[in-house]
Image (cartoon, rainbow, N blue to C red; front, side):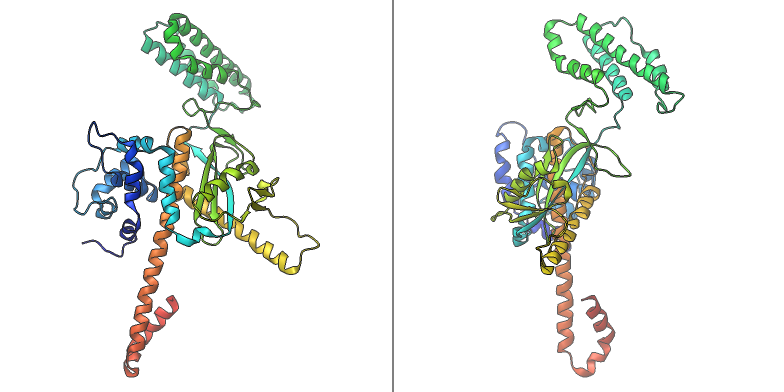
Length: 434
């Protein structure tokens, strides 16, 4: 009853699902509750990124959409939910980064010889984490609330909770950049940090050595946050996402972004993403080239000959046999032909910018909701997988459209001359579309 020419149906029939079943079988045990089908879980992950939906939304829409159900391997309409939304969380943890890399590799192979181009384009972007804009005041108040929770869990009676005082300091921190309020705001900030230290000492005195060990890491982070200053390096910007760092990309509308740096490698003409890497440290772009090229070469049979980058990659001319091309002023020894070729090459480099924009806005890379650095890696891989699959579906639609036009033109060419006048308008319209 479904349209066999729908791109989602064609994609479901093209993907080698047995590959995932063989690869992910090792992550399951013969004991315990029967697991959900691997194709179902992989299909839900892909649909989630393709349609830019949350775990809860994709589960609800799967129940209503027969095309989604066919994509996940069902041949009869299902009236029940496929699984609980948290099952997707457990599945992501089960397969890890290695499993997400295999899913991404499948999306690259779908494009065939296009991924074997000699020239590639490389650029970096920021994958922002789902954290609030960090300020010292926010972090201090969050630490105090967490210390209150620890005291409650351990049954410790604090000498003082400072709840009323915290409320007054929170108000003083508002509009702290105003010249008339900056002194009060600084005093309030200093007092909040003092309260954090008092509560930490009060709790640590009442805990046994064994219990204290469980909170050692938490107290160390709290101490680091209270002592860090404006120009310090390796600062903590979030208590629950400690690995994130600040990145300044020079954007007018967004001076600073908080998350991790991500590198993307695309083919020069085909615009297929063939390599992605999430970077745990905020390194200079030139130092990310080795990991980016290694990721791209894993999904190819031939090594990359030339990588075209922007001026942010200055400092490297060659990496593991790959030539790094960066825009520069024309040399006196260059011929007119060489100057024109370089100009075309570096104009083409800008094609990666809209690709990054589409991956962010259409496939859930704008803001990452998955926890930890592993979450950053998985979200990046799955978002780029969705982009490659969407590209394949667009190519399928274009191919089917052109095939229909060719068939109609063939039929028109076979009709007699006296009958062709009836189809003149249709013929001209189709010719223009073609």
